[in-house]
Image (cartoon, rainbow, N blue to C red; front, top):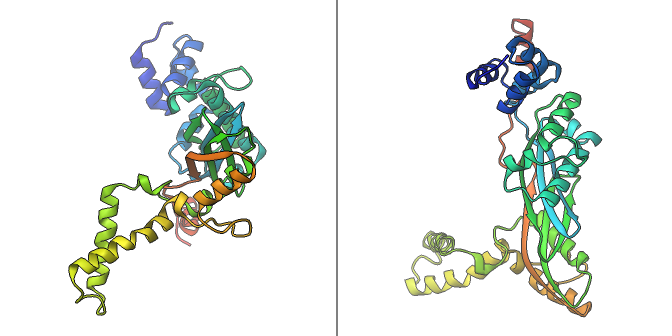
Length: 308
């Protein structure tokens, strides 16, 4: 039995499943809508679609390097119980491998990439895992770097994933340098990598705040405006040291005292080489996702059909 695009849309509305899943189900059932619904239920996809609206703010931020290609990815799920499980974590690592190998342009392209075992796609592998975990899972974001030297760092079993990219000269192993820098990024989450990247509008806003603070300070309010301007300009160094990675104080004071930029230069010099920080990506699990606050007493009352 043939089927049309409107049949696919109808099945999608009835089940909440994706367009491709609906089309595939209709193809396998020769256009029989009832059988297609049954097939989607058997595969667990109809149930998965219903859960897709539930907030997935847990999960894992993961960083790794495969054959010189660096990858950092965030995959979300609903509970930390699932996030800490081997099945979910292996899926995240598999996604990272696919990204390194296939270099997808975006999340849609990633979903269509062949899975690591050569069977099916990333999307179908996610659907398969859902049948075991029964939680909404989303591949939220990823980044890939294939030039220079990449160093990954995963903090607290996936709370934060950092990928640092370095330019290395002198045939030296810069892994420890990269890891130390990644730990700094994980801990302090700098707004900028270097002071040269701070935009004029940001500087103007910071200067405005400093001037306003002086205007409200009885000891400073009556000073000439030019004096205030000079003081404000001087305080920009403090802004850089707090917000710019390379100008920040290196957090591992046990091995070096000074800025991150100075640490990199010193550590590379001791290895008889040169290392230049080029870029980094920092993903924090659930960052920016609004978690739903559950009231379990109300939930139980609703299930019981009354108040407790």
